[in-house]
Image 1 (cartoon, one colour):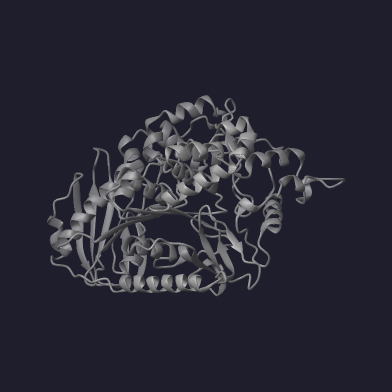
Image 2 (tube, one colour):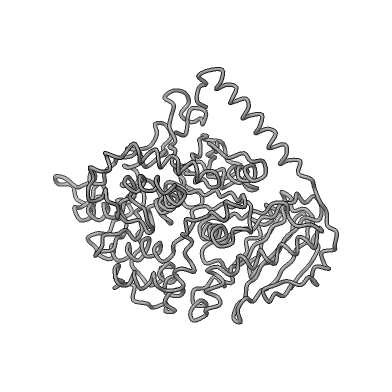
Length: 573
């Protein structure tokens, strides 16, 4: 913790601690409620969305083996609860499976809906059990998907259910069941998801702003018609050329050298890539050294990686130069990122099944100008995309959004999340401030693109830098009244990596979810959040270091003295 400079600072600190303690006491002592109606009687509850309840059963808790949508889970530590399963058919060819679990006693009044992953197709009962053990009523859905790409082909209902229909359907079934079981609706409702679940979380904030009080969106897969083109199709084409392809040794070389150049001393973790000026050209082969050694890169490989890496890397429209999707950071997780070009790549199948109804679509000749324009115009592109920066309706009813991303995410490149949050910041600026922001802003419209006047006349940027920064700070403050983005140093996609991941790995709910609940229920906006790195990224592993999650655009900064492995010697500024 930063040293206190004066008594006023100490008083503020004491006040914050007192408020925080009071807030957590209120969370711990939420009034418990029990059912007023038997679980089995819920089978007769009338639900919308052409829904059939298939099971309404009281289960004893403890250790149970349960099956959901073809998957079996061995669960332990469960309290007695009511399990309700159902199937909804918002369209004639729909099959939306969902579950609602409610503790038989001790319900804390909260409801949480869990997001899915990948293309869904299953329900994670382990995660449901974790929230149930905290006395939440909890729901989840398979997204109306079987988890198999061929089943999307020429099945508009399955496509629409996965894109957006199944998640409000699940909510609209769950809330009447909770009310019938307990005799009262939830006091607060939450949605938590990462990756595809993060996309679903943003979907609910943007299109169903009255449904949830608090939403957590991790590493959101928010822009499929650009994301899978940039993450996969472009890379597949780029590395189809043998001259561009890298060996595993060369990929490890890029990761190791960039990390060594940019990591904080003693930690092995890059605190903030925005402060790193490492250049992949430093790995160019010289003298008699050759790329086959794995210790350097050829001229072609250097040129290719300059196209791939960083916020200004990534795929662009070859005619306009406008960015389609940004690049990836070099520090970790690159191994396996550049697949051998083949038609079984899951993201090639994603695009083929959901956009083109053709698993054998000609991705090898995809044109990043004309084909991208046509792809963006497809109805499914707008159905799947959750990139509306206007959350005014969600904010107006008191909704709170916590987004997060790992700085080293190699699957949904983190600059996409950063750029989207900048898009939200600009949306919340006043008309005057927006003009100042645009002068000093590379991404005034989505997707990205250097379209502002300063790109043509860079001297204008330097002239207006101070005004632009002040305008940006005001817009950040406005946005942070209801939405924050937390950046996790050294963390990859939804966890993993050399960074601290206790907020993800916690088997119950981690520090970020706790902060969201505290913000929603006690009006305490989260600030710097202390998180822990444990051995093997497991909840019970030995503590290796602690650090801070910083609210964007703040940066994790060492104070200059003290233990490098303790969060108390870092600040976000």
